[in-house]
Length: 239
Length: 242
Image (cartoon, rainbow over all chains, first blue to last red; front, side, top):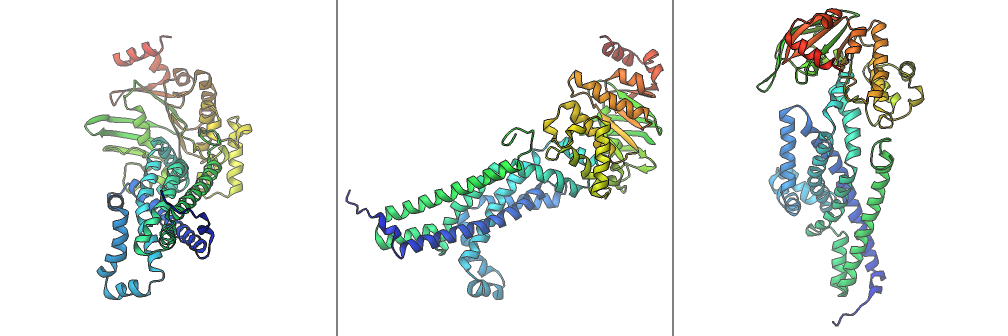
C-alpha cells in the first residue's frame, strides 16, 4: 500500500474550519429536526391511543406513510418535488426566498420522518400502562385530558427514555443524508477535505470520531435524564 | 343512594350481567360476593360508569349514570372507588396522590388539599410515609393510601372492588380495619369481597351473584343463616369450610 499518511492536514487551514463548520451544521440541523420530531411524534403517538376513530386513523396513516418511505426519497420529495406541486407563488418563494433552503428542508424531512418513529415509541409507552391505572384516574374524577396530562404522559415518557435515546442518536446519523441536497454538514465537509487533499482516510476518520463523540455526549445526557426522572421504588435506575 | 335497575351487559357474545337489580341506601353497607366470573366486579364498575351497560338504568344520588348526556367525570368525582391492585399514581408520592384530583378536579387550593391529605393519611395510620412513592410501600399500605385518596374527594359513596384480594394475609386486616371504621362512621359502601367475616361484621345486606345474575339479595343474618338457593348453600359451604 502506497498511502501518504498526513494527519496534520486535519488541523490545517482551511480544513479544520470546514470540519468545525460541518459539525455546527450537523448539530444544529439535528437538534432542530429532533424538536420537530419530538413535538409532532408526541402528538401523533397520543392521537393513535385516543378513543376517536377519525383521529387515531389519521395518526396511523401518518405513521405508515412517513415510516415506510425511505428517508432519502422523502428528502428529495421535499426538496425537488414539493416546490413544483404547490401553488406558483409558494413554490417560487420556496425555491428563491426561503431562508437556508437546504437546512430548512432537512429539518422538515428529517423531523417528520423521525416523528413517525417517535410516535410509535410514545404509543407503545402509553399502551404499556395497565388499564387499571387509567380506570382509577377516571374514577378519581379526572377528565380524559387530565388523565393524559397528569398520569399517562408523565409515566410513558419515563418508560420510553431508552428507546428515545436511540431515536435521538439516529437523527444525528441520518442528518448526513442532507449532503445530497447540498447542506455542507459534517459528512459533506469530510468528503470535500478528501477531494481537496486526497487524504480521504484521515478526513473520514475525523468524521467518524466526531460522530462517535456526539453520540457519547447524547447518551450521557440521556442517562442523566433517565436517572433524574426515575420513579422511586420502581425497578431500574435510581430505584 | 345507588339504584341499579334491570341492567344487562355483554362482552361480544358473552353475557356478563343479566337483569341485575339492587340498591344501596344512604349509610348502608352492601357486600357483593360470588364465584369468579360471576360479574360482581363488572357490576360495581358500572355504578360509576367505568363500564357501559347495554340495558337498564343506574342512578346515583338522582343522577342517571346510564344516560349518555350525564357528565360522568363530574359524577365520578363524587363517588370513591378502590381497586384490587391499588392503582396509585406510581410517579407521585403519597401526598401528591391525594392532592392531584383535589386541586385539578375540585379546584381546592394547595393548602386546603395538603391539610385534607395530611388528616386522611393520619387517619389511615401512614403519616410517616407521606413523602414516599407507592413502590416503596407494602400492599396493605398502598391500599390504605388508595382509600385515603378516594376519601379526599369527600365522596357521597364508596365502591370497593376486591380491595383485599391482592394482599398478603397479614395485610388484609389493616385494610379491613380502615373499612370497618368507615362503615361505622356511616359511609355508604358497596363492597365486592370474599371476606365473609367483614360482611358479617358491618354489612347490612349481602348480594350473591352467579353467572351474571343476582341470585340472592338478603339481610346479612338471613344470608348466612338461611340461604335459599342451592347455589348459595354450595358456595357458602365451600368458602366457610376452613
